Image (cartoon, rainbow, N blue to C red; front, top):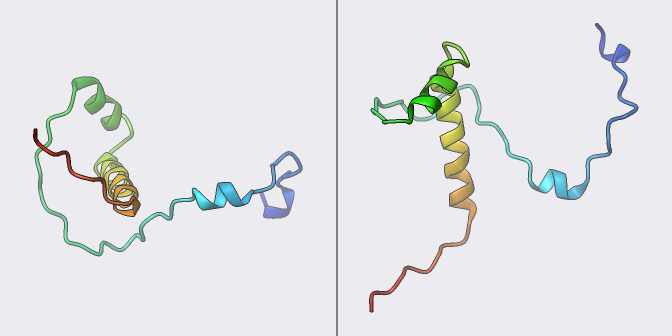
Length: 83
């Protein structure tokens, strides 16, 4: 199929709000060397990720990086004070 054969007539216009929530995927090149880490997951979670295929480690890495980037972009939260 060629690009011009794709029907985009029912595709909604991208709004400024949609674009402001966009997340850029990290490049394919690894900028940091990967380290080995053992994580204990609930069985259903581990099964679900493994079901994504042999690249499931990369998917988990991408999701954790995305979460980290979101958290780093938030303003710092005040620390709870002890009574």
